[in-house]
Length: 82
Image (cartoon, rainbow, N blue to C red; front, side, top):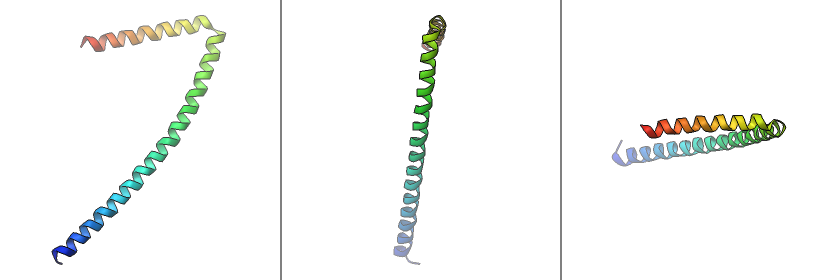
């Protein structure tokens, strides 16, 4: 085999790999979009459920928010202390 033929084989192989990578990339993006949409639907349902619960039990909602805020505050303080 001469150099020109080897060069063509390498270019063809690289082109094929590039096309396969692009197809894989597009497939992954498509799957991520679908999963993202499912996650948005699930999060919306959970949000609506939590909202209804807090409307029925405002004291508990305030308590959970307070506890969550304290926990986040402690974590942020520890992170910033380092």
